[in-house]
Length: 605
Ligand code: ADP
Ligand code: ASP
Ligand code: MG
Image (cartoon, rainbow, N blue to C red):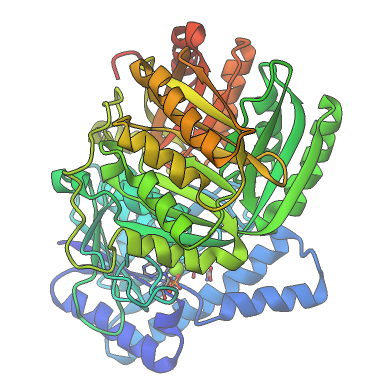
């Protein structure tokens, strides 16, 4: 008998009528011959209301008590859902996270799932019950109630689907349906860009990146489970029967879609550390201190700087700024560095598998922003995403401009065949995990998975210093580089002072000198005070896996391993599926070996 996991979000259980509609849906699935698990969120705006209430009493509510409070929202929903199903004449039983043994770590308000026991659920299903599970919550080893982070019910659903699929061992038939208030995943949030279009199929990697750069329709950690345990997710409307969006493993045709979607994070803050010593171990000290607080660092732009000193810019979510600054005060005092920060920033990103193999996406994105007169304050690129930081006032306009530039409002996918092909990076294809190791992963479900580590010695770096910090600068440079037929991969831009920015990008090694000349010419036309330096002697090392950015421990382990070997990191670049660092070329092989050792990845993987 097949199993269906149905997840209903807050708006899908907001009223008695909607709960009844969801109950009928669950019943239909059971009558079609399936066993059914229903995972529910808190009703409507309950979670927001509970947070507001807590803040009325205590400006900084303790995280443990916050979890105790917030978990009640889901508990209300499961009881009501079970009652609704019983009113329809069917057997149903509700369980909290603790009751079915969803064991998490103890990071209150953003706990990660360690394991789930299936015994009690199996028993109830076999007895003919529809099983109702509270989303978003678990319990740590000391029986403290924990929650998984906002939007975490998606993650409960995907984790349950994963565990039910693989326990008992075998390939049990499991469907996972995510019911929400939109009829699928759109090219961007339809509330912000009304011309956004529903996507029929999207790969795990694309959805993972999109969710992690702001597409609030799915909790990004749910996609980690989907990918790790190969659970296709069907995101669809709870108000209609129309086919929704399938989040599935990557297929060939997806590799030709340059950009599948765009997203906005409204409230980011940038921290700049000035006058940082340019010596091995610095990134490790800075980012491990932040990671220890479980704060996710978002964009990172390390300037090339001088031999002795450099500056490092990065962003965090606005609401994590105070905590990040508090940790950094101590670290920077030790280094003699200075901290600055800027608030009211938004991040706009585009995501698409086609970027792995085709160039030209960044150029088109920067041109669209330049045409709108929007200044780019920071740029970082990932394996399949490009993010830019803009002022908050420009955020939605920037998102719209980018959406239009990639013709995301048009029905046909934008195929990339006319664009230049990027040189392949060893191991850069997304690798699927062998099912044989799945059972081992069930005992530490949300642990980081690193699938491959690769070295690329075929790129060099060009850096433009003193670039005017104004709309159109980057668009101009990348247009000229593209016109010269040079393929750009990594791009990092960061403001260095109120008027200037530093731009670094990587190009194939044999094109470094030519790229330098082209960049020099266009930069000098933008401002006579610019200068361009080239470094053909770099090595890039990629660590690939799932959920790389949100697992704060990855960067820590990576930077730590390099620091212990005395290898200096000159560029860092993070995404959910790949973290890469640039080091000196003559340390490339050594860095590769030391990272393989740190992550226990052998040479043949
Ligand atoms: P639920 O309570 O069902 O989990 P959410 O509010 O978490 O619902 O997610 C659905 C909302 O996500 C939509 O109403 C939409 O405004 C927003 N959203 C953001 N990005 C996207 C996107 N790319 N596609 C669809 N919806 C999106
Ligand atoms: N109720 C929680 C929240 O609002 C979890 C969820 O809805 O997924 O974030
Ligand atoms: Mg949600």
